[in-house]
Structure formats: C-alpha cells, structure tokens
Length: 510
Figure 1 (cartoon, rainbow, N blue to C red):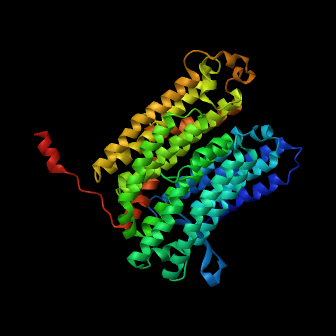
Figure 2: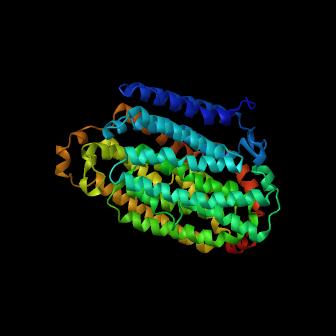
Figure 3: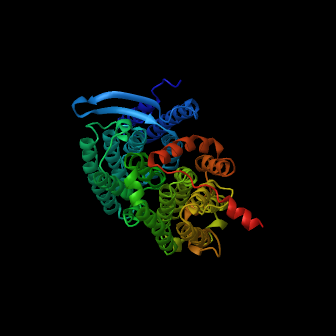
C-alpha cells in the first residue's frame, strides 16, 4: 500500500469531481450536492488509507512521487508527506465533507448556481491538498497562489454583506504576500543550485545575508496568510463575509498554510535566519494573542468575533514554532489540527444560528437557547473548545505550547498565558449574549428560530465533537505522527531541548 500514489491521486481526485459537478445542469442542484458529497467521502477514505499506511518509525518523508514538469528549470511535480503534512491532509479530508453537508442550502440563498458552488469547494480541496503535499518549492508556490481563486469566488459570489470588498481585500493581501514569496523562490533557485527540490535545497549552503533576505520573503508571505499581527486585517472581513462553510475552511485550513510554510520552508531551509528573526516572530505572536483577544471582546458580529479569536490562536501557534523546543513545536502542529476542528465547528454552528435568525449581530439574539436548546448546547461546547477547556483537544496543544515555551522564554510564556483569560471572556460573553438570559421577543417571530438541529446538522457536528473530546483525552495517535517530523525540524534549525533543571527542583523540594 505504501507504493500507491496517494498524494497525486488525492490532489487530482477533487479536481475531477469538481469538473463533474460543474457540468451538471443548474436545474439539478440536489444531484450536484450528492455528487460533491460522495466525491469528498472518496477523498476521506483514501486519506484514512494513507494514514494507516504511514510508518511512524519510517522515513521522515513518505509517499514520495516525482514527475517531470519543466526540466530546463528543474521543476517537477514532486509530492511527499511528513507527519506535519499528513495531519493537515487528514484535517482537510475530514472538514470538506462536513462543510458540504453544512452548506446544503447556502448557495440557494444566494440565487447563484448551486453546482458551481459545490464545484468550487472541491477545487478548493484540490489546491489545499496540493499545497500541503508539494515537495517542490515552485509547485508549492503554484498551489499557494491558485488556492486564492476558488476562495475568492466563494466569498465574492456567495458571501454576505460586503462580500465583494472582502473578496478583493483577501485576494490583494494574499497576492502581495505571494509576490514576496515569488521573489524569494527565484532567489532560492539561483543560490541553491538551480533546483526547486526541497531535499536538495535543504542541503544547499546559502550565505548568511542572502538567507536572511530569502527568509524574510517567505516569512512575509506566510505571515500574511496565517495571519500574524499586523498582517491580519483581511481575515475579519473575509471571515465575516464568507459563507459559514467557506469560512470554516478559510480559518480551519487555508490559514494553516502560513504556519505550515514556516515549519516546512523557513526553518529547515534558513536555520540561521530563523534563529536571528525568532525574537521578532515571538513578539508578533504575543502581540497577536493579546491584541486580537481584546478586539474579539468588543465585536457584535458573530463571524467577525470568531475570526478575531483565530488571530489570537495563530499567535499561540507562532510562539510554539519559534520557541524552538520539541514540546512547543509539537504543540504548535497539534494546535493547527485542533484549531481547525474547534474553530471549524464554531464557524459551522454560528452559521446555523445565523441562517435561522437572518442576522449575524449578537445584539439580535438573546435567550435563543430557550428556542433551540440543542443548537445552543453545541455552540456552548464549541466555545469551550475554542477557549481550550481541559478535556477538549485545544487544551492539550495550548498546554504543550506554553510549557515548551516556558523552558526557553519565560516572559513570552507568561504574557501568552493572559490570552487564556481573555479567551474565556470573549467566548463566555458571546454565549451569554446569544443563547442565555432573557429571551428576545423578536426571536419568537422568526420562523427559523423554531427549528432546532436537523438530522443533517447533527451529522455535521457529531464527528467534530467526537474528535475534539477524543483528542482531548487521548492525543497519542496524532502526537506519535507529529513528533518525528518536529524533532527533525528542530535538528534542521540546530536547536535541542534545554536540559531539565534537576538541581533547582531538588533544592525546591528541600
């Protein structure tokens, strides 16, 4: 099974499905939904098979494939996956079918083509898989840029209020970041031996000053994509305007390309530059945690609030990456997965609530739990997972990030911990204002608020709840996959974990 071309098949399969769905008659929306959902399930089955075939004690990169593309430039269709990429590929495979189910009626409300909407979701899945599976820097850049196109149309054509403004802003920010990376990719090709192969480039000797400039080009592109403070301003607009399902993929997966890119390209290819820029990156991460949390507290729009919470979470991921310990690094990668599950669930549930009320404003709710108790309960659970309550998956990743950072940079860890307190404030405030307290009389006059979770919606939220609880108590199957890749990345950077302060502990015990 390990010889099966998993990565190329997984990349191409959604694109083929998108073509099939797009060619279906516009008058057959239900058929388009069913075909898209079935195709996404096929991708999920293949991804599970790949997870089973992955050998934890095997090579760092597995399922490697390489096909000639532009020989004169040294460009190939090269795919490979380490534990970090494998986890993200599984996240995509899990989220996309759930998003398709959750978006069953989204395109109908926009009065645009239903087949095109679901075809765009499958095209997006193709590009997301490609960007995480690419082991050729040029191929990664191509997927990095093409990924913008389906999301642009999902926001601009099927979004809500100010969708065109949000789509253009999202596209321009990402495009500018892509230009920085393009310059760095070209420079890397010149100084790295005129090749784009990741393994060859990781062995190249690059002058220190050149490496720092190249690192900066990649880092700016990834910081915008993530997004890190102060490159974050596009996300609240895009997340607020996008359909709930598209927003779940935007925040749950697309933004992880930024942090994944730092782990895959910035740290191994430019180890000295990574250490040189680390204090600045840690500062951006800490500022993002506090700043975004404070802004989230003041939001009245549900989707913008969730978007700001994600900016704070990305601050934690950034801190975990640049702490340069295996604990913090593993926590950062685990955070990427758990954030995708928890915030994906939160966005989908918020979308269900908005669809019923016809408004995203928190002030238009109040006491909704009396009318839709099951939906309110799921929202409460998603909120608790988002604030990393013990027993939920995000708690494990946040704990690993903080304890791993504390061993190397105590002030950063202490300041970042304040984000936990602020997270409790904005999440509980949101839940209180929307589902608790006195019932808003206007809600009783809204037909949608008389319907609690349907069977389809329960099928959407149940797997995410189960995974969040399971990984909250037993993350070992995932951490076993992540750990070898993180350790190898730390070795690339030339960092080792600090030795335990045994003497200090013994003195304290006395």
